[in-house]
Image (cartoon, rainbow, N blue to C red; front, side, top):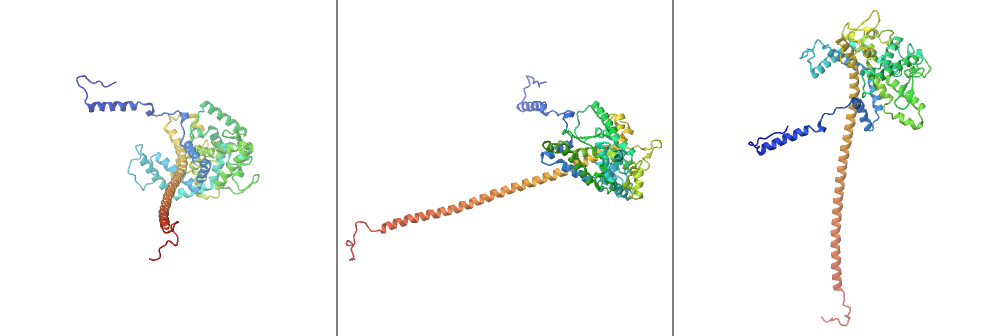
Amino acid sequence: MAYIVPLDQPLSESQAKLIAQMGSIKNMANLPFLKKLVLKKEDEISLFDYMIKVLRSMGIDPQILLSAFLNDFFRAEKLVEFFLTAVAKLAAAMYKNLDDNITLPFALNETMTDDQIVQLVETNYNWLNSQSYIKAPLTSILDGLKTRMIQELMILIFGKPKKEDAAYGPNGLVADVQRLNELLDEFVCGGAQMFSVSSPSNTNNGDLEYNRIQKLQQVKNGNLTFKITCQGVDISLPDDPMYLFKSVPPGFVGGQTVSPQQAIENILQYVGGQVQKQTTSNSQSNSVSSEKSFTQKLLETLISSITTLVSPFFVGFVGTIPDEAQGMGPAALQMLTDGLLNYVFPNSVTTDSITGKRVGEFVPATSCEILSSYDKNNMTDDQKKKTALMTILCNLLLNMLIGFILAYLIEEVKNQVKKFIAKRAEARIERKTKKMKDRYANSIAGKAQKKAQKTARQVKLMSRIMGLLKPRKNASVASIDLSS
């Protein structure tokens, strides 16, 4: 509504100016481009996808950087740090200070600020890192079983191998059939539906359910293949996939387990070889530069299904202990049986006498359990506890990846800035040098010109003098008076 001025009380000049300014501000606030932008779900982009686009725009192949992160993450030291940080965060979520020797200057409850939570997590981590009875066996376990995590990761990507003995057992990807079924359940239910690093897709619930039924049928038939993006290349596990993780050629038994870095390289070479076999020379370059590489798929599956991969380390192994653990010593074997959580929170995880499964308030729920009975908008306290570790692990691993990429990008930007500054300085010096050369050249040219002009004047003067000294043409020798 416009401001009404009574006729008998006209505004002064300053009041009229103020009213006009207020009206302008109000009109600007109603402009459409100043309204808060709300994107549709399908138009949003995740931070991970955005950073991948930034890398490509800078001419950097994301596959190289993602492979470097995988190699770094599967080092024993990095895995130990990851596990201890997850437990420290879980304790902080329970408002627990693990170090009895340190009294924090704030109440441990839901009123804690973000800075106080960070301080509590740091206190818990420092305590865990200082306890040799926890860190030493955990380091031995993770150093010995880190390659097995990648073996199980292959099940979560490709499904069950065609041959039964290649799936589980002494020469299989997993230790026993019970662990295989746990991984296949995660594979079918799809951990990525609970936690995804990429932008949300437009797939509806009906399509997701259909896909799960199809995957379950393929798993039962043992003929599941992994499709590389839009290239139409179907890749399945080799008949003897263990050669990817052993130091022996295909068809041979035994050999030493290779490092995770070598295993990842072997897998990428195998996938690359399969792509080359199934693509023509024209489309081969397209498969290499596909929008989502196998390395990215490997990493996304690792993050979305990290809880399933590492839960036995937290709650204790059920069934067959992997062969690689036999030489780790009694302390490591005891931790494998009891689980890391029982070392930090005594008696928090037990074994159900009927099902034989590990149970406890913080034992992570499976993806199938979450899909069937969890409502993210209305979860009970018990359900929140059972998803707490999963949330912590997924977010922690994603944060590590984002931090790894950001550190590289920051370093790359610094290098670009240094090159830009150096180039500007070089151009400035070049301009200054050219100016000095031009000035010197002009100075020399000026002096030379002055000398030339002086010489020209002297030549002109000499020519005049010589003209005066020459005899006249009409004069003769006889006419010269010699008497004087």
